[in-house]
Image (cartoon, rainbow, N blue to C red; front, top):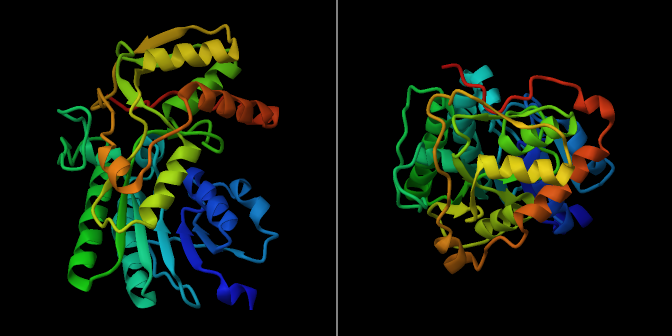
Length: 331
């Protein structure tokens, strides 16, 4: 009886960084959570604490293949996708398939179940933006055949097919455009700036930057991001909404902050700028403020302190050197 009265939600990419935090949030909201992940980049350790719960299930499955979930569903969150440049350069075909075939399969499942579906898009759909900050009505500056094209175009197609299902089938759809997010459970060697810089600092290594390090990013702590996603899902807005932090800083400044917090002895070193590395990332979140009454609350320094403490709590073997190089695109 208990499971029948709970709302049921399917979360794909459940063993990943954001997916696992979303599982936690919806368990806290007393949903019955069905997690799905093929573990190509996810880690079961992120959700193993949920396995003992009666209102959590896990399916090891690739959503690029036919997806079947028994019983009714109220919601679907589609977060299955490699999100790191290192990952989608290694597995470009899988990245394209999860954004296209996987999204198509889940939209079909949502239609069958009469469920509302939220798809996780990204600030990468703006490419290397020619305007700043980036608002939802900016169409982007994207190279479809560049090194980032497999991810950028997968997400752009994902938004297009989701919108088509909403317009043609009147399916309840939501789209969240996620800007740079960080926090506990990010893989140390996934190639993104925050986990890479922290790991290099904790190992006593130099921090690797590219170009002159003056590329800017806007970093949102994970709890703020999860709250934003939760509000997007339960809103009435069917068009894309940016969720991110508007405090823009250079990667040089980020590296300096991490070195200071960790009291590490490494220094900043510079390598040639990777191909098509975006020069700016800063969201316009006026739409989220107006529609969702949402904006981030956690300061970057507070978030970094929590994230560094998380990495310091891990077994020492997790800090073994594994080419912790930020992005590392071939020229």
